[in-house]
Amino acid sequence: MKKNILIINVCKEPLHIMEFVEPIKKIILGEGLNFFEKNYSDVSTFDLDNASSIIICGTSLKDNEFTKHMKFFDWIKEINKPILGICAGVQIIGLIFGGKINTMTEIGFYFEEFEKIFLGLSGKQEVYHLHNNFIDFKKLNNFEVYCVQNGVSQAVKHKDKEIYGVLFHPEVRQKEMILSFISK
Image (cartoon, rainbow, N blue to C red):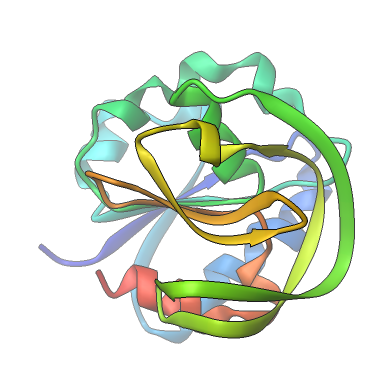
């Protein structure tokens, strides 16, 4: 199957797309791969069937509108395609699998320690945080936690599916992680 990556935008404000969606598109374009972008409320079964993998992008600190519309993400549990959730995306994944939103604001560059290789990342890595909320994935039995910072799960993978999530923003400092994901 030819690569055709579905990029899901969860931004309420159109201007925020420039910060959270466009950098992902630029990384994929740089690899010469095909992609298409959809707002989460417009994703159809046709879109999901035609995607080889899916990236659910992040959004701004105060934009939690997506949490009021979780029905648009029910497909996550059933689909058998690689998914990468970034910040808001990993929160969506956690909520779909029964997690609860917790609050803790982190903004800036942090050094994270990856206990095992996660989409090409291992050991100590500098990552960029920009979030108010998180899911405690240690409480979800169907996820493995690869990186924890201040008690917060920063990188996770579903134990049985190719569902990955990061609370940090790899489009800022860890582009190779996104490239590792899209090569699956």
